[in-house]
Length: 321
Ligand code: NAD
Ligand code: AKB
Image: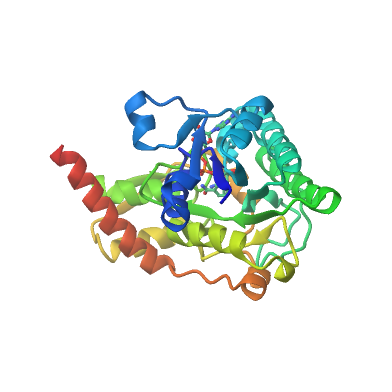
C-alpha cells in the first residue's frame, strides 16, 4: 500500500493527525515530517520521522520517491498572526510549499489534502451563515495564501487530474500541542489558564464571534473527507466545516460551569482583533454535511468538559515529573 506523508507534522494538527492516521492505516505507513530537526531520541519515538522543508522541492521529491507516497497531508504553513508578522516568509512557506507539494503530486500521482481556513474569507464576505460559495477577498497575507491555495488545488485537480481535497477549518481547540501563532489561539490559552490560574487576559474583545472546533472533530473531518467517494464531492477546495460559533465571553461562561471562580479580563491586541473582525462569525457547512456526511460530535459544553478534564490530567502529570 502506498504510504502517507504529513508535512508540518509537529504542529497543533499534525501532533494528533499522525497518531490517528497511524492507528487507521498502520504506523509504518505514515511518514511524519517537519522543518524542526528532532534529537535522535525524539525522531526515534516518532519514527518514521524526517526533517523536510516544504519550500525545498528536492526534499519533497526525495521523500515521496523513497517512501512510495500515495497521499500527502500538507499541514506546513504560517498561521494568521505569525504570517502578518512575517508576510514574505508566509508567502514563501504557504505558497511555494503548496506549489512544491502539488508539483510532486503531479509527478508521482499523489492525492493531496490542503487545510484552508475561515481566514480565506474577508470583510466583504457575508459574516453570518457564510455560504460555501461566496465573496473571498481576505485582507491578511494568511487569507490571501489560503484563497490562492484553494484555487491552485482546484487547478491541479482540473488541469492535471490530481485528487486534491480541502477543508476551510475554523479555530481548532486542543490539548496535545500548543497552537502555532493564530488569531483563534485565545480559546486554547483561556482553557489552559483557567486550569492553571483561574484567570485569563484575552487579546480579543468579549463579543468577538468566530467558528471553532474541537480537535477530534477536525481529525475525523480530514480523514473522512479523504476517504469520501470522489463522485459525491461537488467541491474540492475547500469545504466549509464548523462545530460551534462562539465568543470569548461564551467560552468563559462555559468554563465557569466547571470552575466558578474563573475570571477573564480583556487587553485587546489591535492586530489580531482586526484579523478576527475580517472573518466570518459563523459558517454554513451544509455542503459538507450533504456531500460526505460531515457532523461534529463536540459542541461548546462537550468540548469544554473534555478539554478541562484532559488539561487537569496533563498538568498534574507534568507536576508529578
Ligand atoms: P502549526 O503552526 O501548529 O504547525 C505548523 C508546522 O509546520 C510547525 O510544526 C512548523 O514547524 C512546520 N513548518 C513551518 N514551516 C515549514 C516548512 N518550510 N517546511 C515544513 N514544515 C514547516 O499549524 P497547525 O495549527 O498544525 O496548522 C496546520 C495547517 O492547518 C496550516 O495550513 C493551517 O493554516 C491550517 N489551519 C489550522 C487551523 C488551526 O486552528 N490550527 C485552522 C485552520 C487552518
Ligand atoms: C488562525 O487563527 O490563524 C487559525 C485559523 C483559523 O486559520 N487558527
